[in-house]
Image (cartoon, rainbow, N blue to C red; front, side, top):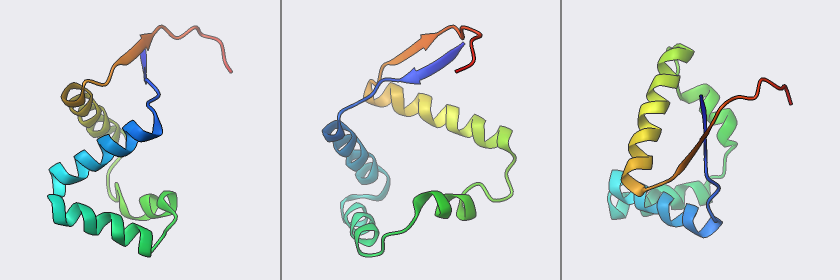
Length: 90
């Protein structure tokens, strides 16, 4: 069984993302986070590879991601479409 999250509009992504930032960091630090990212643009993929998940194996990262995703989907009512893998390779 595999799951794919629905595509959400750019507007919804911004709203949900900012709500999450405010919830985690509070109003002031959420604004600071956005300002810092605008002022000091960076290659997120490169940053993530060198700063996140250092010292963790792929299984622990995947499990943490699944748990976090399930929590956020439940909290914000994001629908998930489940489907059986067809066995075909794309």
